[in-house]
Image 1 (tube, rainbow, N blue to C red):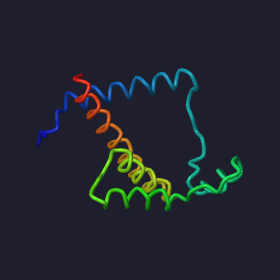
Image 2 (cartoon, rainbow, N blue to C red):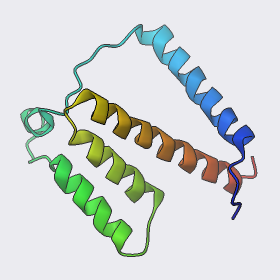
Image 3 (cartoon, one colour):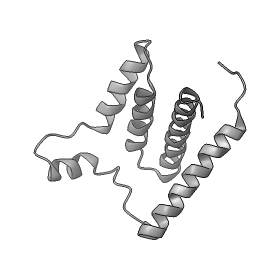
Image 4 (cartoon, one colour):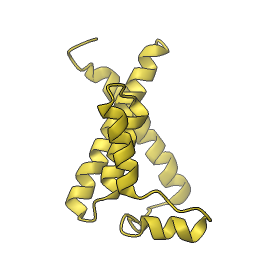
Length: 117
């Protein structure tokens, strides 16, 4: 395991993310959807017959996996997503989304290492 972050690898992943954002923007234009964190459970329950897991339940489940000593990228990502879903204050929500993005990038970097990219 390398102790130093290979910024060239990270930059490559971020360029891919930028290109995906360009594709999304070209297809959909500027997006200004509501955040949705305030009404997650109500929104899901309205569209599905099942009771939606609360943001807190998602975060709690992921945190239990992490505390079990068997962390996975999925659990780490879901824990961060759960934290973001619990935030209604814009600055705190933004900070949580930066963490979500960073975990997603780290996961992509790991996949690239495994695939020899």
